[in-house]
Length: 195
Figure 1 (cartoon, rainbow, N blue to C red):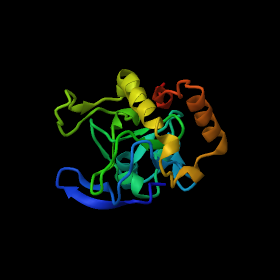
Figure 2 (cartoon, rainbow, N blue to C red):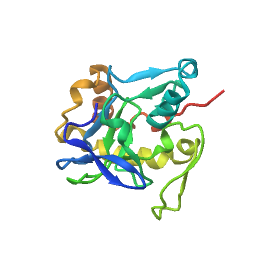
Figure 3 (cartoon, helix red, strand yellow):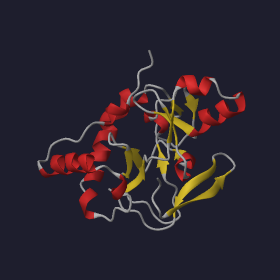
Figure 4 (cartoon, rainbow, N blue to C red):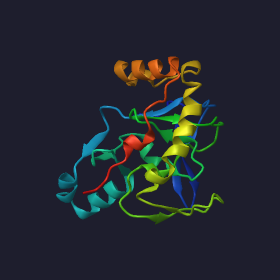
């Protein structure tokens, strides 16, 4: 489920639609949680689908660390890629704002951690990267972990409208790590290696 203070808007002719903040969303806020309405699809299930449906699966799904394709039921499927993403997925089945997100600003992910199957060219944002690769998670996980670590410093100090969707066991684990100043689980845990 996406943060309630977001909506889908037309961005431009290059990226089409995207998810935009309706209100200020501070760093450390959960922006998306995988919930019970999100569908988990196996490769075998997708192979049995009509080619037109398979095309939509390819467009709107991401692959989790078990190799399942996750189809978000809500606005989350419209979150666009950015090499300067303001949201990052954690190892806990939710995403966090890694910097403040202003009203009217797009919420973005770096698709490099979504276990894509084929590289693709993205809009050049002057970051030194212009292509997203299937192994980007292996290359950039330390950078993303540092960003997440900074965001989690605010985790218990900001309003969290989606926290009720995070299991109590996961919350206890996170709070314990924060209290003991121990590292959180790495985003590298999201990596799926195809066999």
